[in-house]
Image 1 (cartoon, protein in one colour):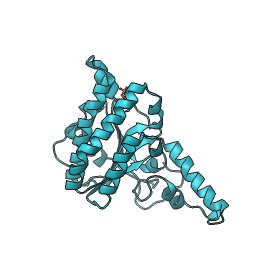
Image 2 (tube, rainbow, N blue to C red):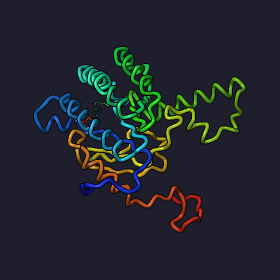
Image 3 (spheres, helix red, strand yellow):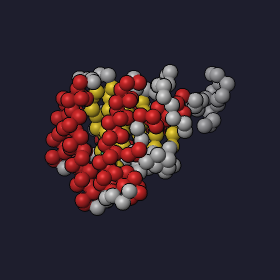
Length: 251
Ligand code: FPP
């Protein structure tokens, strides 16, 4: 992945990012892990700013997975504190730039001091329309699908829908991401090449860009380089290489 200075001509509509490598960044410097998370916030700011400047409509950041609840208590507490600080500090800028905040995940599990500022920020930015920034918090793709299945099952049990008439759109509309288009591009930092329970349904046709850069070192040039790599991909959505020829089973 080469660094690019210019924005690509056709930016993806929706970019999702698995922000990884904060702990390793800190360890490499002999610092506590939480310092990596603290520096990671700088990258969050840079990427949000860059996405907005380029005209990306949807940016989704994997900020805290359900698995992350299993980390040492002090790390979880610090992450929650950083998130709260971030929301309070950035709210005026989100509004200034017309950025709408959304959240996906089991937000009911978040501590009330975070939920309060989160609900306020979501409400206060609800009418903004230049870009939607979605934070995945206490999020896991399988859990999201299970919760969607429960909603649909309950509707079927109540006689509101017929099981045999459930469509892809019904499932998509029951996910936390209802109304948000599927990601075109998923970026993962820190050299790990896996999906880690992120947007499992939504990323069905996404392009993936993996970079060795650790999240706290990921800034505007690295984001632009990922977009450039995406711009050279040949997206087929399950269609065959020749235009318009459908080939079932073709990946
Ligand atoms: C992965 O690094 C990163 C996280 C678990 C949290 C990401 C959080 C932030 C960037 C800060 C808060 C976010 C917002 C939106 C304010 P890791 O700890 O798994 O790193 P490692 O794999 O090197 O241990």
